[in-house]
Picture (cartoon, rainbow, N blue to C red):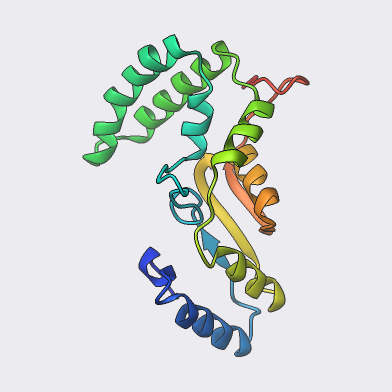
Length: 181
């Protein structure tokens, strides 16, 4: 399997990576698939140096008292466990469920997420070209992420990226765009 790191997509290495992928594609694409993470792989810090993730965009739309209180407390409790490699599947599920309930209680609306995320989102240099190359050579593309597919799909549409599939958390929404589950 071909493994590429973030450094491979730097300005200096971008053309070499594209050339390698084109070479592999010329050899036959029937067995090739491109599987990418989303946050901090396809995205990068914006012009203001801000780095946004699908979950932090959702969280940023919480009322201030929820953002500075319960949301911050959840992050301070679970994030160190994650960084130390001690976040079990059960604890990750617990964190996710508590965060989701906060977003429901806080009235986070996906229509607001769309406006907010698109205004602050970024795309890593070379990503659009990478997806175009894969499309030209019929290489299936997948985004596999712990992020939120509703938000990832908004980003893809905004930047003209067309993955074959997005595998991640999908939020259930009310007709008004509020998070229902």
